[in-house]
Image (cartoon, rainbow, N blue to C red; front, side, top):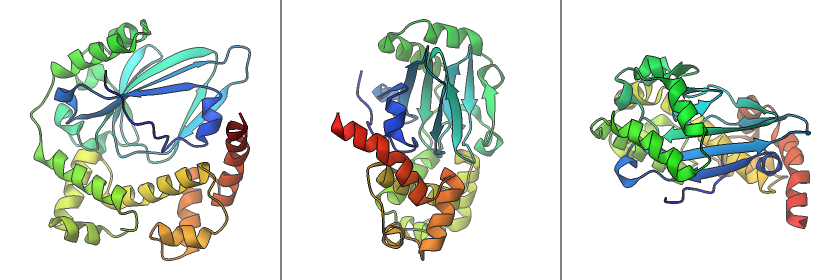
Length: 275
């Protein structure tokens, strides 16, 4: 079993989350790596403690999730995602690479955006039985083997459009100052119309949507690690023309201003450093 990223990017106030749930990520087998970014597992035991609301920022990826006795495909969220954790439980998820779920379903990923659909509808399989099989064991190797067998039975050919979308995401993650779709198209030698069409069909959102979210993800991660203060400088580092646009985008997605979010993270960050 290969390790996956340890980045907490996208999880709001990750140090607070560590006090309430356990998150592990695992890389797929090499033959599935083209399509699957990672598997993720969340476990919690809050018996005798208050419920905890976990919040995550949207990623441009489809997740197939086993929880609450069913297996469903979750399209890209338009806003941050809230999940109330209470009692004791666990969730197993498959995070697909951006655009890489579309070849499995042969329909536009935009039809899934903001929605979740059962695997019985998408794949014609018993999602409830799959969830039961995955969640009744706590052995991660066994859980991964179960879902990988399901994926291999439906594995489509590799799609060059998924590769192109991956190049776009890599460029945007490496160069967060890029803020115009035209710049991306020029760098990769593809027309804007083609890129817009591919993202709508394969990812479910526009390239501009992805650019905006990546910058907010980067800002939230820096603030959760202790960055604070000069919002104008941070805005410049992230490619914004001015501080006002940065604060507007951040608050619209995170639900707090940068100052409010930094303050919310600070107490948990200080406690973790002291321990």
